[in-house]
Amino acid sequence: MEKYLSYSKEVLEAKEKGLPIVALESTIISHGMPYPQNVQTAREVEDIIRSKGAVPATIALIDGKIKIGLSDEELEMFGNAQNVAKTSRRDFGYLLASKKLGATTVAATMIAAELAGIELFVTGGIGGVHRGAEHTMDISADLEELANTNVAVVCAGAKSILDLGLTLEYLETKGVPVVGYGTDVLPAFYTRESEFGLNIRVDSPQEVADMMRAKWDLGLRGGAVIANPIPEEDAMDPSFINGIIEEALKEAEQNGIKGKDVTPFMLGKVKELTEGKSLEANIALVKNNARIGAEIAIALNNNK
Image (cartoon, rainbow, N blue to C red; front, top):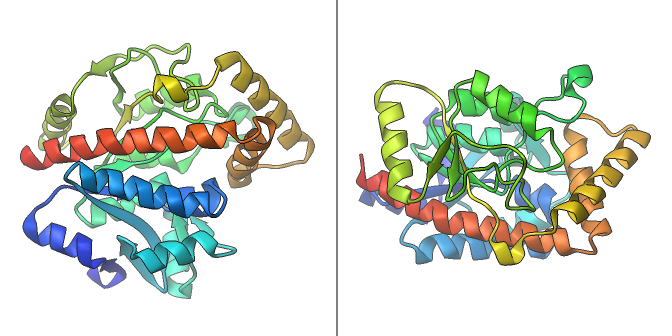
């Protein structure tokens, strides 16, 4: 296994010193945002984590290796690269063997983080059950990974282009805790609230760390969704954004866009229809997740 892992100097030093490390995905760089905002946001997110006293580890597949932490040059190259493969659990073997560039999704980042001994991962939003999944069976591999892989995931809930109710039902069936961070309801990515209440609420990094440590000490495999709402000043008006999502979904259906192509199409279309406001919201919520995630990583590290 170790022959496939390659650590950046910063992450290697952090591991040797026992410092808290925060995993970051790379799909947000290659598929989630346009250049140069993608690279700029990735650097700013890393800096937020450092400023809190933790160490960022952006994960990607480069030249037959799972890179745990990217250098500045690698980040720039990745943000500019064309035809980067979106990597989930099923893709690791092929992409490593063929030495193609791979951007890690939530599922793939969780796998790589656990292989590297990293317990906390910060992202924008998790994937979930797509609308119409009762006919298409289109369910993100992120959910299965959350059930099996011991990494806590700090996010702004699930993307509101999904069926949030079915996503929560699926996670409940799989025994994955969905935890409201300072909230009693599921945040819906661009908005602070959805119509769905949550069973668990926490209000401090220590509560999350204690909860995860108890779960893992019992041998209960799997992660948790730490749902951290977008800051109030950056949130979008629910009726406005939901109307745009409905419009974008109709267009995706008319164009026959399916499977893993739906999310990038939807994010692009929503950005276009909101005149860039959705991208600003996306960047703000990722930065907010990085702040909270770094604090939880520190609490987890102190709680070993």
